[in-house]
Length: 336
Figure 1 (spheres, rainbow, N blue to C red):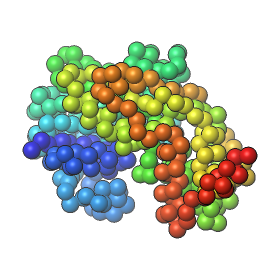
Figure 2: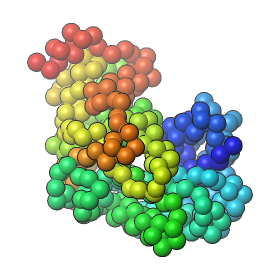
Figure 3: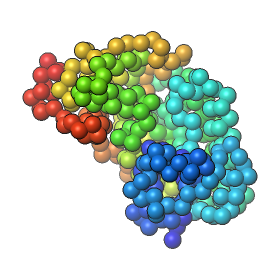
Figure 4: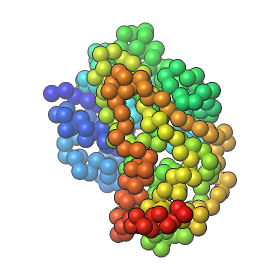
């Protein structure tokens, strides 16, 4: 039985990845903080449906000894390094801890794997935020990086560390440059989930307003479960290769608002208010990925498009509060 170790297993991607690996008969291990193990509730809620099938280990990305001990105990065949401080806005507020956790954590995991199980296949979760102020569009594996946030900077460093371990030590170490990917498991602080959850609360009469920053920022949004399968395909590839994973379509935050509110039979213009407090000090205006290499070499393509993603998220949050989506006639009326 193959063994996989996931850092960030309690997050959106980690939970979908764990499910996928379990379906394929893997023994799945996860690195989690002690507070999550002791909590046993909200911190591991994404894993609740299959928690009894997982092997969770108390550790920290800020502690090399704890990572070393876990890798020694597990001796994994595959490591998926997803753990990070991943909320871009927070990275501006606390750049020091973001850089320390994300960069040192990646270095610690790579070095533990190199020392203990050098034959292990390693995946690093890169990000489209590495491109930042883009020099070309769409962005592919050859597009230069110009990160515009501490988070983006930390991911570029992690990408370079992963490549260096591949080139210096011959490890099977690769990075997925994943564009924005969302789901009903997304944290409420991220803009897509902030929108879908507010739509549900406004529909339920609990709120009347949604405050957002830059409505014109454009992103390439995909479905997290699709992107997790791309991660797995990368580690099944014959060679360690870096890939851009994206849908190839871009939409603005305003587009997302319009589609999300319409799903509930509402007009976003009646509820969305701009608040400059939520704008970044250095904005990333446009991200659009070219995943043609992944399609050609991995056979990967997204299954869920932008409209389907919005529908999934809004319907989940409506149902969570006991409401249903609008009829097709009502949705059409809100976009006239």
